[in-house]
Image (cartoon, rainbow, N blue to C red; front, side, top):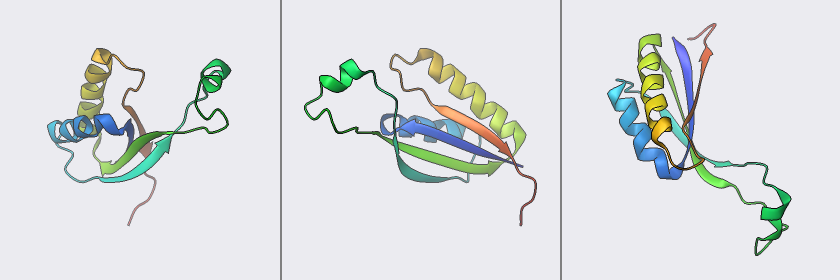
Length: 101
């Protein structure tokens, strides 16, 4: 068993849920988060409020699941990210679990 962590902008939340279903990942949790990128100073100066740095509304999902389901999910994410026309791909990482109760 491993821990799958997925972050995505809110616009792609439904896509991630569909990919979980296709990969047969049935149990997961989610939490709203705010994502940030370092923005070039030119873009900061063109803002209405240049002293404010706003983050992107995002969501983080996590699931304790099996390797084969994670492999399937990663394949689906790679396919989705390759067709994406924005700079906001789905990000996913896997963390091994040493102990659990």
